Amino acid sequence: MKLKRRNFILEVIIGIVVIYSSVLIVLFIFQRNLMYHPDENNYFGDKLEVEIEKVKIKTSDDINLLGWFHKKDLKKFKTIVYFHGNAGTLENRIHKLNRFRDMNVNFLIIAWRGFSGNEGKPSEKGLYIDGNSAIKWLKNLGLFEEDIIIYGESLGTGVATEIAQHSNFAGLVLETPFTSMVEAAKNFYPYIPVGLLLKDKYKNSLKIKNINIPVLVMHGESDQIVPFWMGKKIYEIANQPKYSYFTKYDDHMMEYNDKLIFVLNTFVRSLN
Image 1: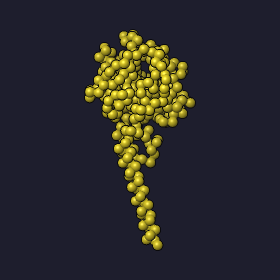
Image 2 (image 1 turned 90 degrees about the horizontal axis):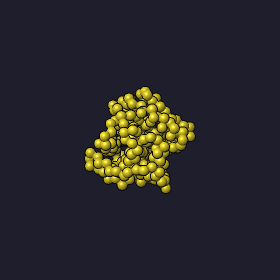
Image 3 (image 1 turned 180 degrees about the horizontal axis):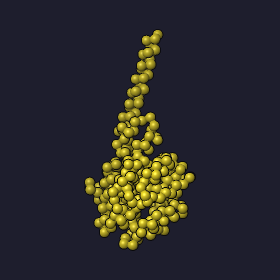
Image 4 (image 1 turned 180 degrees about the vertical axis):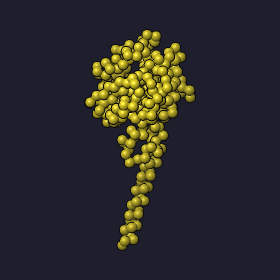
């Protein structure tokens, strides 16, 4: 009787180990499908109220990226290069871009590889190449680093902090930033050794220490995807000069209302 019970317990333990190991294998293989969502659509029907030129930006590994470029006055105004998050097309950001019309800025927003019809598959290394290619494209227009403001949204903050390190860009805007992708993933998979499995780690909290240009951190306390404490920590460890826009009720997709635009516009004007 005792032997049967021991064998049963052993079989249960083995079964749990097999199931858990299988889950780990599946998560490891398909992790980028869980991280990047190019086909997700959170917004529909927004109309562009600012003139843009659709441009193609060739990367160093020969991928053509779709970009939207708004040129108001390259010599007179700063240019925002916008790195979007892990989901959706450029159209999903129209409601934000429309508010840039109220600001004296030029802007370039690019779609990552694998997004908005672009070739390639997204990865941390690939997105760094994409981001640097956008900067190179702007420099080929005659812009210098001090003419450019780096703007990262959610996952895009990982690219923004990578590129802004040891640089002389005019400024850096981080909207709903995370400390690292490992810590962000632990929030959803607390019983998974994500530190061992994760390929794309985006270590924002380490890189922010290497940034010595003005930084604006924006985050809502009600964020259900990237916990608010992460944005607050990024702000706390960032070097001066730094500014924050923290709200009580904003979720992960912050409301682009007059308050946010006032803060963003004030930050941009301070860089001139």
